[in-house]
Image (tube, rainbow, N blue to C red; front, side, top):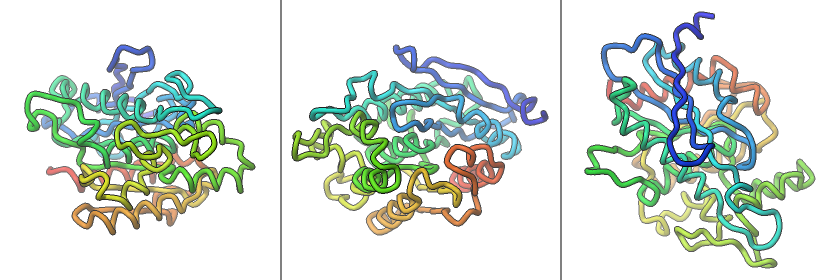
Amino acid sequence: SSTLQATQIKTLSYGPDDTHVMDLYTPDILPGKKIPAIVLAHGGLWQSGGRASLATLCKNIVAQSGNRIACASIDYRLSQDIGGECNGTGIDTYREQVRDMVQAYSLLQENAAVHGIDPAQMFVGGHSAGGHLAQILNLRWSEFAQKCKTPEDCPAPRGAIGLEGIYDIPAWNDYDVNFWEGRFACATRKAFGSPGPTPPAAMDAGLQQRAWDAGSPTWLANHPEILAVKPAGDVLLIHSTGDDWVDSAEADTLGDALLKSFPQIKVTVKTDGSCAVGQHNDMLEEPELADCISRFVMDNSSQ
């Protein structure tokens, strides 16, 4: 198809682990000027999935933006491979996954010139669990940002995009119990450890708060005093009308909390079907989704 011809795909390694790999989708013929780029993380409840699930979305973003946006889809280490477990107190493996995401972002930024990308016009995003990682990274950027020579060399993301994201871990756990009969309790605990009190709650090593809280973007947005920082970039949250795998209230609640605590950023929440109407994974294939993301990126890039 013309979409495929318009897109060049490069597979790049961004770290020492076998899973530290990303596929970079760029226009086949690079435009004269450097273009914005989005770094996306896949879903799979922190324990499964892979970068190929975002292939169509990335191709659509490149093509439907008129070859004006690049898109990278990353793999990252999965929760059970970095010490996550169902039972006991457990550990905050999601922090390691956020580290993987920032490592991919930083490598792409360092090599932006090679790929025709503008290092100052980069975005993070993801689907489901990947949407969670992107929003954590946006809110805790100053903690996770990799060091570089000068801040001018490695600007923070201009925006963070969440698609069908899980942003409130206690609320997600309740939804899992009520809607899924607790089918995903193990997956949640592999990423966030125990909620406490028995066994004791896992702690977030960065913020010294319970991982179920510090690992919830909504909780972070409601407690800006704990972070003492503001989000790195503006936020776009999309939840498809046809998706009930994750509760769409996750997007609305995070959007409200961000607007209240950080009036200086722009927050856009689309849960009305204007960006996607399909079930959890099907929505990724919809052209409307790529259009909504492309518009957000172009609106937030200094063209």
